[in-house]
Length: 149
Image 1: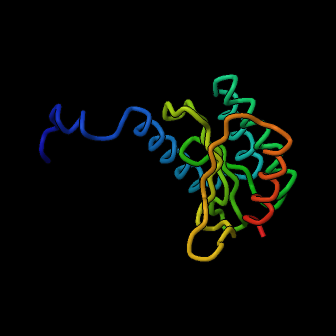
Image 2 (image 1 turned 180 degrees about the horizontal axis):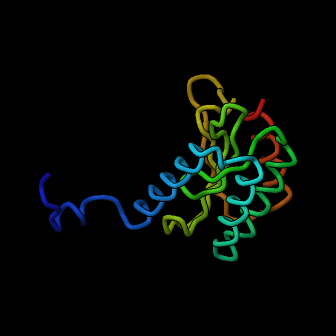
């Protein structure tokens, strides 16, 4: 196996991306041991939210409450270290990515291909989220309802 050099290190994944991949690997190992019960997934999500910066944490908490109230059939779990909500098959439908995760200027509410958001040949699957308002909450409820249907 070739030795790693500085170029490979600097042109590869960022430290944040490597950390997210390590978190995902740990999640997959836990699931393989049947340790990822719904209660464990919920605790992992709550722990991930607790580690966020205050402004991201406030958004993540509102997303969590809204998703779990709107789509109780979705199970909370972490996905690449982010709060996510999966269908009965264990496939992620919706996730929250805090701005601090990859040093972005906004948090993201995202949907995977299992979400039922199809609208013709083009539709959004990711939304920038900067502030929680009643209008934002209404839109998130609409999106999660459709995605989980």
